[in-house]
Image 1: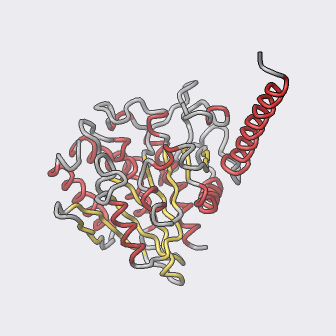
Image 2 (image 1 turned 30 degrees about the vertical axis):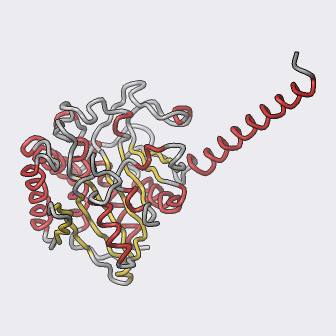
Length: 337
């Protein structure tokens, strides 16, 4: 028989555990879920002429990468190089002078464009997206959508002058087997910035921006986040670790000021929600730089994730145009701080 003292001790231990869980939940809500500003609500207005043109350009970029070029990675090297050449040419056609960052004996390529700042040239905001895919997937959402957004934001900001430098980068080799390793394109670039002692104010990782739905229960989450967020997949998400909290708050606040699309934010420790480090933002965290991932939440809503079904026709280009317009506003505002 268990004595009274043991029962009391076990009860106290259970209370301590429950109290600790409640404190962690309270911290998560206060520190990680509560966001500045107000997410857009209500019916979305019709696209204006500029956003209609943006929608069409986004669609063409995704079609070229996902359908004309298709599966692109280190074992489909011709297609990977064709994608890099398409991105480089797109930057040149806008009037930029891209620099190709070649690395490893395999001659992998990051494509880098600098829009230099007027007053604080040494302060850099990075916007990046990877252009490779997994095997057997055309990668429309993952990540032709991110590359299309990168190109469209660069187009919108071309010819304008900002206080800080804006750096656009198309990364090679985000997918397996490179993720988190030395030949991951973003890891190479972040290391070079660290070695040059560059002042990276923050980094935006554009990771899957094209899939949306208003259907009930179309959005899932890693536990226990489902208690705190919408069940419809009709928003864009900003996510980061704790050390990037200030950068994320500034970014989502500016995005919400643009007021054209619903948005949600999450700041969480990587050990609790490991999915927040699944893209190029993790490379910048590895070198101590603030970074956030902007995403449609990938496999938590898009059933075509990493499959043959991740095709051009599965994406919502009107929603993409709204998101890209908001991100362009966000980057411009933060570059003029």
